[in-house]
Amino acid sequence: MKKTGTVTETHLWKIKIYSPPKEHGAPHVHVVSKGDKAEVKIYLDTFEVVGRTRFSRQAVKKIIKYLYNNYDCLIEHWEELHGKKK
Image 1 (tube, rainbow, N blue to C red):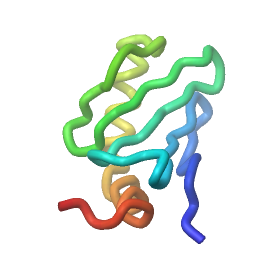
Image 2: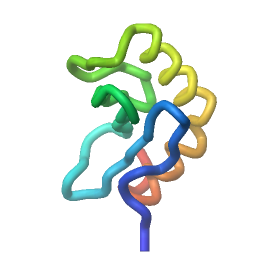
Image 3: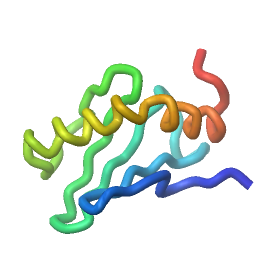
Image 4: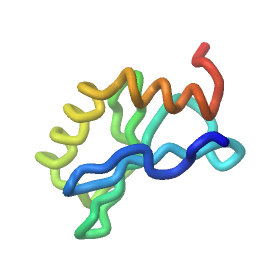
């Protein structure tokens, strides 16, 4: 069975990837804070932030750096759930 939902977490937030049909489109993750109920959606290929977030700019920069440093693992997990990117 393929794991969906929380892929990894730090002491500050959880990174989630959901499986189809709930999720579709370009590879992305949802990052949810453990404290102040902030959430952000970020595309993995461009590290673009989608929509508004309650995360501070500094927190988003740290999240993007984490995603960049762990890109291979995250994209692999996405592809396990959604198929290889085209």
